[in-house]
Figure: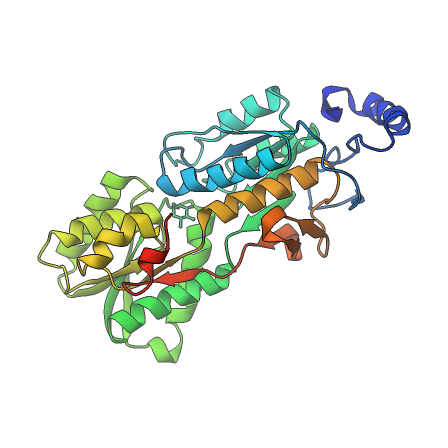
Length: 357
Ligand code: RAM
C-alpha cells in the first residue's frame, strides 16, 4: 500500500481504515508527508512497524560509471532485496552539479517509495528532493550529503572529521612531515570531498604539520581522464611537489596510473581514498604505500536499510532513533539525521590481498 499514491488528506483517512483492516501492516501515510524541511519534524517513529514488502527504492549515485558507486549500489540493492522490495540504480554518467535533478524528478513521477542519493552538489538537488519529500517519498543521502532540509537521513561512510584528519596523517608519514603537497579532489561542488578538505586544512594548520605546505587543490571531476591529466599538470607545474592526497577513488587510481609509468614513481608520494581492487597493482609496483577506504558495499547496504525504515515509518531521522540494519546490526541516528557506517581501513602491501572490492 503506497500512501503517496493518494492525495494527502484522503491518504490519512484511508490509512486509518487500512491499518484497522490489516492489523497495522500499512505504512503510516503521514510519514514523510510533512517532511519538506527539517529532519524528523512533526512525525513520530513507530519502531515496531513492519518493513513494508514491495517498497520501491531507487539509488541515485554521483555517476553510474564510477566503480566505487557500482559497488555501493550493489550493496544497497542487496539490502532492498533482503527486505522484499524492488531496488534499482539510476543516474547520470557525469558528476556535474545539476546532472541528477532530472533523475530525481523522474523518480518522483514513478512514485518510488524512497530515493537514496549521493549529492553531486548539496544545493542543486535540494529543491527536487524537497518536492519528493513533500509528496511522501523518503529521502536518504549517502556518501555525499544534500543541503539542510533536503533529506531525512544522511548515511555517512565514516566520521567526516576523522576522514579529513587521517588523510593528513597518511601523507605526512609518507613525506616525512615536510614539503609541498597538493590535493587532487573530485568535483568542486562535492559535499563529501569539500567537508573532508576543510578538516584536512584545519589539521594542516596545527603546529605538528608546520612542515607541510598545501600548495594546490586540483579537481579531476571524478572523471578518470581529467584526473589523469590534472595529476600530470600538478607534477609538471610544481617541480618540488612531495606528495598528492586524492580523497576520491577515481582520482587516486588515475593519479597512480600516471605516476606508475612516470619518473615521479617512488619520488612523489600518493595517498588518499581508493578501492583495494583498483589500487592493488600500484601498491605492488611501489607507486603507492598506504591509502584508506571503508567497505563501499556496506555503505549501500546501510543506506538501503535506512531508506526502507523511513518509508515504513520505523524511523523519521530524529536523533537517538535506532535503525536495525540486517547483518550490520543496530545503528543509532546521530545529530542532524546522520548515521555512520564505521571507521575506514588503511591498506598497504601487508593487508591489501585480504580485501576484494
Ligand atoms: C569517489 C567518489 C565518492 C567518494 C569516494 C571515496 O568514488 O567521489 O563520492 O566517497 O571516491
